[in-house]
Amino acid sequence: MKRNRYTREFKDQVVKESLEVGNAAIVARKNDLSANMVSSWVRKHKKENSTCRLVCHDIGSKGIVKWFYPRGTFGVNFRYG
Image (cartoon, rainbow, N blue to C red; front, side, top):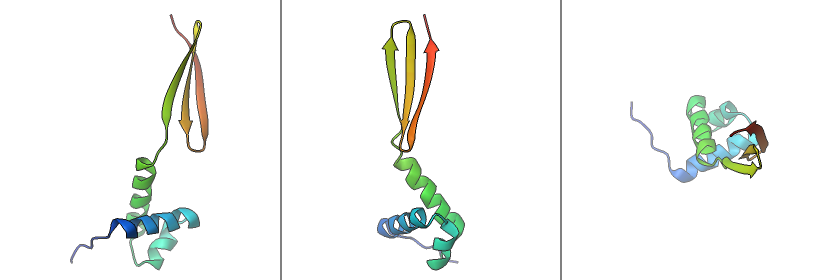
């Protein structure tokens, strides 16, 4: 069985549609693809396009660490020194 190669544009279109629909299996069936393949493309897309960043603030004897994610912020307070 020959292995198919898909263009970046096609993968991007399938990933976009999968994110909009919210179900990789439906999009895979529509495009005659494996649901596992579409899910892996979506995971790779999310990993490559993550905007997570770490910011540290020094406030006297306290430090605040915040991670900024696309959908919100997670912060942790800690003491050091």
